[in-house]
Image 1 (tube, rainbow, N blue to C red):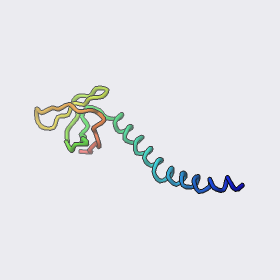
Image 2 (image 1 turned 90 degrees about the vertical axis):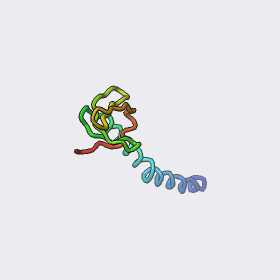
Image 3 (image 1 turned 180 degrees about the vertical axis):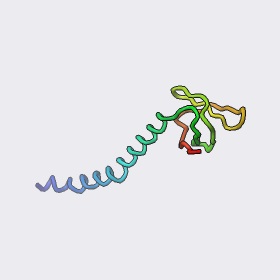
Image 4 (image 1 turned 120 degrees about the vertical axis):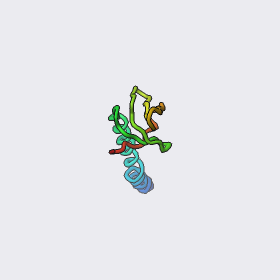
Length: 86
């Protein structure tokens, strides 16, 4: 019983790390993946670099954004950080 008692604090620390750090991060990554999978042409988005634009083209990994009239850029799908509701 003495050897097992030495592992109890380690088990408690691991449980705390799991519920405070690992699990919330996994939920956040799942939400981000869901948001990226639901992107469609016409959505207004914000990139991780701060560019705001409307999706005018969409492939598996690349988006074409219109950031001004007749100004289009291509960005990686993974660089989208938010979908705006305008």
